[in-house]
Image 1 (cartoon, rainbow, N blue to C red):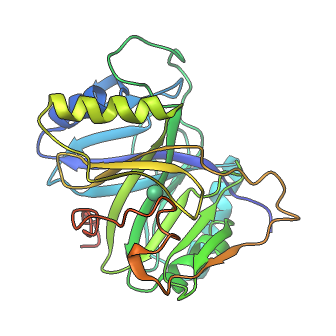
Image 2 (cartoon, rainbow, N blue to C red; image 1 turned 90 degrees about the horizontal axis):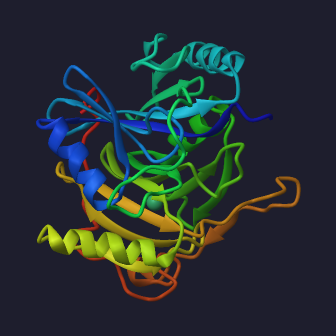
Image 3 (cartoon, protein in one colour; image 1 turned 90 degrees about the vertical axis):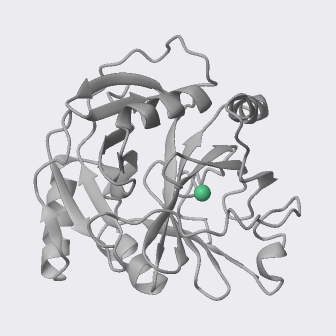
Length: 297
Ligand SMILES: [Fe+2]
């Protein structure tokens, strides 16, 4: 099967205070605000018009955007979703600055928008106090049945399984760009657990921790190195209680033809090295569901 999804696109999060949430992301991680439209505030870390939109609302996930390989791929996703009887929220873009989109409720409740590329109309570099990520990297959402959610990623979105856990509960799926995962999932009530940015170096993660300390806040977990994806991570909580992962060194799968998905033995539980190769188990604050999807809570 050929890929329909090229890479991570964008995230839309609702907030009682979109301006405050946007400024917080700019302060801590170093994206910059690229525009405003009514109550909506857009941010980007590169030449895309936006990678994050904060819209007015209750502090929930509105949709996770995936950039399609083509307009025809958006149509193909629509057709597949329709023939499978999935709920199609809309076949119009949820936001501006991209032409075509379809928004689908995945099995288990994640709301996913597959869209043509967001306009590249920003400078690649910009002034600002934060470390400035390369890009938005992936999202991680929970579903009661990750087998069904995973089948959706493969059969409707044309993504490929990179790794899974031995109980089949956690799964990681990649898109055409070859990075180990664009969608990660765990078993649980429907929620968005985290959204993640790709940073440049370990010092960036230290700077994010310093930025949090200036705001009298703390990281939730990390630094550590995940088994699946091999990326070094830290996590903190955004103003709505959704975790934000800052990541470096995610594995890149250059050749699908020779890659074999790995199954991680989780018999040691959450303290096992499969979750953090460096050995520090997740904190209680990491083991939270995250935030609801506004449409499917
Ligand atoms: Fe992650």
